[in-house]
Image 1 (spheres, rainbow, N blue to C red):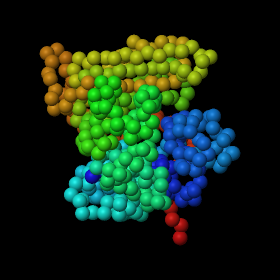
Image 2: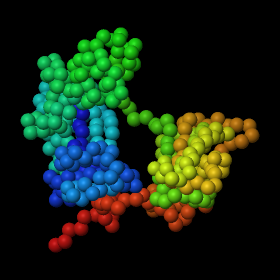
Image 3: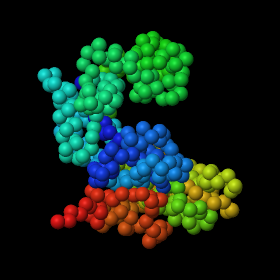
Image 4: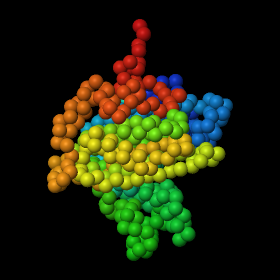
Length: 419
């Protein structure tokens, strides 16, 4: 059996842990630079606030309806997620952290357990120890655990936020209840295609012919169909190293000078290199892109990217910064107001499998230098040790007008108890 544990309205719940006066009130969390809504409490959903709602369009509505608005506090959310996942790992021999607020538990050897009660126990402990409410769905397959979780979340009073699909009767009833567009892995376009074939529920999908699904959709949808039929097809996935790493940012203001973009591109390359070293990889290619503000139609528009095939594999911040700046020189044009830029590194190889070239290679002295740089930044704070091409005084700051305290990760912002 598989259990899917899903944190309810996770970002909003994190804010409520430290501000309990928000419980029962509408809460929304905004994306980077306070762009649009990326999380809503149930009360905010009831007000008709859609996911992705642009903040500038809905600002007056938020004020009128008394909606509490927060800038994304990813330092807090990441730490709270780690606390929840650490707790969950004690309840099963195998766990797959599916996202920041979801995890699959493989309940192997739990044949004599009352899994409904076990789910309730998990929920109570997570709530007591972290303050985060969760819903638990248990079923013979991952796809059905997703369905069971949806039922637990939809009917928390009746299920105590824990629901188990442990019979064919329950499975069929649940699949007939679930709309096809709400099935895990079925996107908007695919659901429209299936609806043309008179597939309106998850149960209708399981009745399709295997050969038709494989030939008209893909092997991925066939595996999903089998999983929904109760045939375990989708196992737990092991955490794998990323195949590409990107650092992209929208600027707080329009940039018109090359030197401004050069500093940002260098900083983005350094960030990518640090992440690359964390997974013990090197890259063989990188891409640099710059673009103007597409929302400012009155300004001239320009966007350009360039992929650079590196002459050798590297994870040195110095070398990746140099290559990225060379690419920037080739695509930068005067006379434009740039709003966004980024660096993407790709084509990874293991750190220890470096192939030596005849004429040009990564500087071996950089290995010890990067280790020292990472160690210092880890001990005294991020971005303390930088390259000369970076602004020594500048720390990247997004527009975060409604940022809450980083209660669990920054000592100066912890809760103060006055007695």
